[in-house]
Image (cartoon, rainbow, N blue to C red; front, side, top):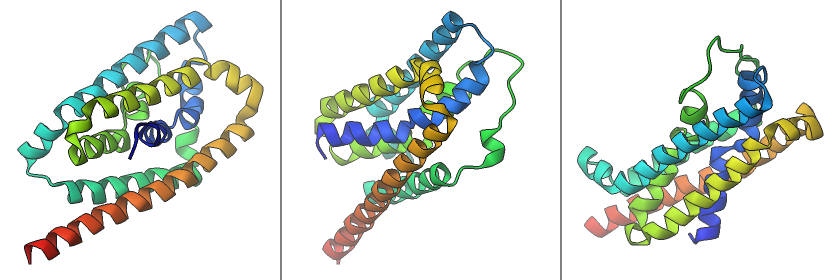
Length: 200
């Protein structure tokens, strides 16, 4: 996987278009300057969390005794579930009530931006090819910049596109993510089979 494909994968997994309705429902009551400040803060927190997993990914895997095939299969399963929810959204989750206090870290930074699927994807990239750390760092940064640009402009996008167009875009990215999840799952199984045959 090259830098561009990794950046596209991470950007789709972060799902900024799918997060717009949630961000809008939680922050819509705040004035624009305060809303932008909150979104910027949550984006920064999510970026730091993802960077921590990127930097400490191999150490975490070694400490937990996890191997790359297991991570590939688990990551594929998680991505598949997330993608299914994007294509077939839960109406109750889509109609969340506003929080009484200003959101902080949860749920906007984690798990809306730096969710389980994004963390699993970052761990998978760095565990497969740890010598390409700076490539994955650049891909993560590029994907984060795309997500930041979309979420910071979410108010304008909600006005221009409307909820129906946003739902269509979310479902389209969900279909792309399903294909990526299946490929990730197949790759994990293939690596496991190769290791078993090599050990045999």
